Image 1: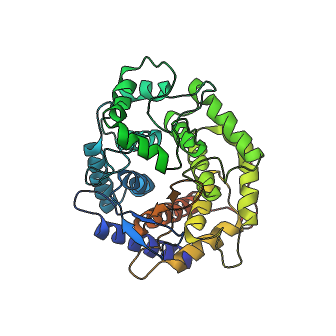
Image 2: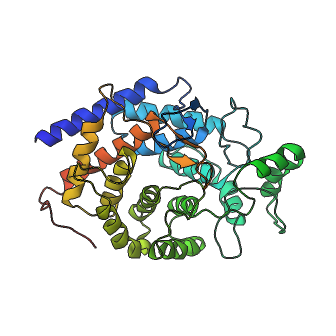
Image 3: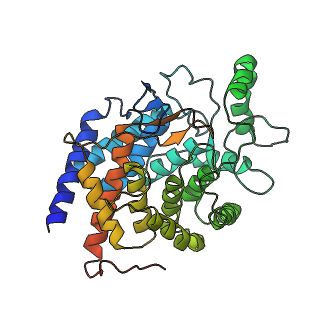
Length: 360
């Protein structure tokens, strides 16, 4: 009962923090920084993607009226940032890079899944064919909607790719300066495609590739943006919980790796953010172990008095880890998702024997 009361209080404080810190536009704050704990230089960045992620974390808490209002504001903001064909820019229209960075697959699927969950109109009749066009010969999805030496019949793809033809010098320096390439295949992003599209004939290559990545222990280097294995575990668990049970071969090895990264304090991995990812991952996989309760206690204890959890880099600008993006709002969103998932688990598994693993 004591833990239940603490959970309620912690969730309420976290929700209040986000409510107070959401911009009037519906956007949530994000920063760019060079170190994981973001203690050095740290600059605000107006990214549409960060708001998509925070709002997605809050979906499971939307039965709370104040959360429902927050998610509605965020979804309205995201809908307003949508471009022709049902695509989204990484950066908002207020950012100087808004017209420079190509449209990307991750933003499309994250936003589309959120809008579908909120029953907001999204042009899937145009962006799903666009998405399916943007694959390599092995059936995996490219990260960028850009020009490549391959004939594509989808007209919307050409209209999007034409963006860089209009600014050839800017485009040249974009690909020259950044670590990404036109032919990037990022498996974290492909996992988000899988979450959005589900277990279909089009996503079988993704499922096979992800099972192979976990079997070969390459989860820390399968994506240029998601460089943290706990992030990959979390993304995989979202797809699994959504019904992609073909991922079952990955469950046991991931659970064992999370267990191996547990600290006596209850922390998982290197950070509070890793701990939140671990809790949600375990419960999404349907696993209840004593470590989960300890990790939840750790998260509650690490919450700041004002309701937030400390910022930590969530995604990066490439394998060199020169810079990345994160914020208190992002960390708090993931922590609230973890605590709420645990609370829901406790309510529906009252007879669970703490300490016994329920590994599939």
